[in-house]
Amino acid sequence: MNAATTEWTETAGVAFPASGESVQVRALLQLRELILSGELAGGTRIAELAIVERLGVSRTPVRAALLRLEQEGLLQALPNGGYCVQSFTERDIADGIELRGTLEGLLARLAAERGATAALLTQARQCLAQIDVALATSTLDDDKFSSYVALNSRFHGLLYEMAASPTIARQLERAASLPFASPSGFVVLQSHSSQARDMLVVAQDQHRQVLGAIEQREGARAESIMREHSRLARRNLTEVLAGHASGQPPPSMPSFKLIRRRP
Image 1 (spheres, rainbow, N blue to C red):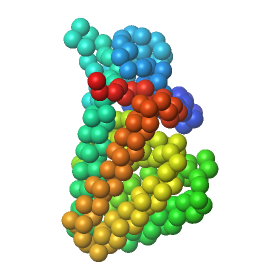
Image 2: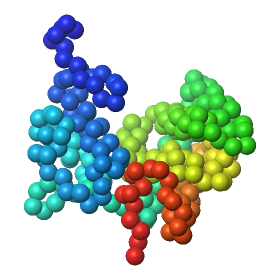
Image 3: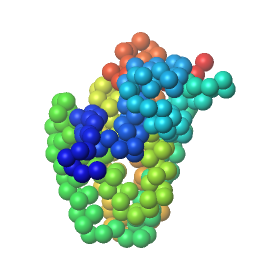
């Protein structure tokens, strides 16, 4: 098919060629967004045909999307057919964060032991310098906070590249797909906390420490720092949920609704 006759679709402002593969990707992105946006709340039963009609695609990409989201843990297959949107206990989320930290620690150790390229190390240092700028003021406005989120994600991505292990990186992607388990998941919650900047400063110090350990080829130290780094997310989630239980309003994150309190 030539450029003149290629059919294009658009998802989240990005154009994709309407090939079978890209339609599957589009269906997956749209369905995941429906869940994480809160439009499909925890406990909602999802029928394949209803999603086909809602997304306007055929059954094949919808089936692939439903299966992928079941693998990610956002959906649960029902015995009589169809799926149910999962909700998560605090322990589920904490375990996801712990798993993510374990895998990130392994990638940091491999990066140190295998040796990161000069180009990646330079990009990581530049990224940290930009984070310093975002954290230079005593409080964070929306722009600086958004900048931190993007730069934090960028820094973690560079660490994954340094390890040069696509196999582990794929497993990490799955572990980080749960709400709040991604490297930047905790910072969204933190924007609602009076201790927001202080905790981000601690996280930034850990960024510098792990990068230094990688540069010095100190694998065990790099792994330990990254595992500790992930625990900031767990600590923050615990504080936010404790505040919500005491009557404070929850953060304005729809996916917060997916968390159910343990009895």
